[in-house]
Amino acid sequence: MSHQEHQDKAPARLNFAVLTVSDSRDESTDGSGRTILAMLAERGHGLVEYRIVPDEPELIRQAVGEWLARDDLQAVVVNGGTGVSPRDRTVEAVESLLDRQLPGFGEIFRWLSYQEIGPAAMLSRALAGTASGRILFCLPGSTGACRLAMERLILPQAGHFWAMLHPGPSQGRA
Image (cartoon, rainbow, N blue to C red; front, side, top):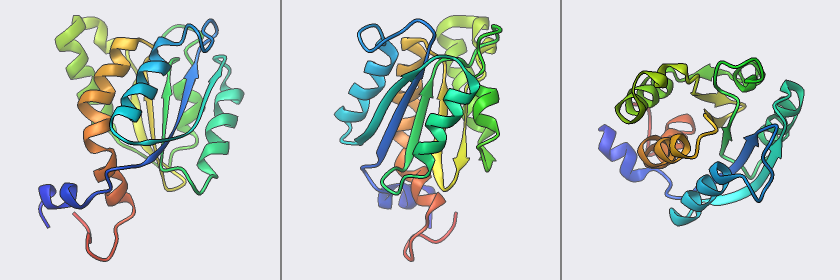
C-alpha cells in the first residue's frame, strides 16, 4: 500500500492530552496550550485532558505516565522545557518513557523553525516518539513553535502515525 493510501485510510480523529510545562504560566497566560487546544478542536480531534505543571521532571513524568496508561488516549503533546536552559528538563523527563524515538520529527521541526527564526532553531530539543502504544510529541513552549509543529507536522500526520503504530487488517505495514 502506498504512503498516500495509508494516509487516506488513517483515522481523522484522535484523542489527545496536552501538557504545558512552565514555572510561570497558568491557564490564563498559557498561549501555547490554548493554541494547541484550538488547533486540535478545529481539526475535530478530542481532548482527554489538559494540564499545566512546573518544569520538574517527576511531575512531568507523572502526568505523562498517567496519560499513557489510559485506554481512551492516542496522543500526548507536551509543550515547554525543551530548550537548553538549566530549568529545561522536559526531554530528560520524557525520554525514559519512550519505546522508540522518531528522530525525523525533531530534525524537520528544526529545519522548518530555521526558515522562520534562523540559527536559534538549533537550540530546540523538540522530539517525538512512541510510548506504551501511544504517540508522544515534545514541543518548545513558544506559541509560534507550537503552531508551526501542529500545523506542519502533527496535525497532517497524527492519524497516519497512529495507523502505522496500530495497523488494522486492511492497513498492513509500510
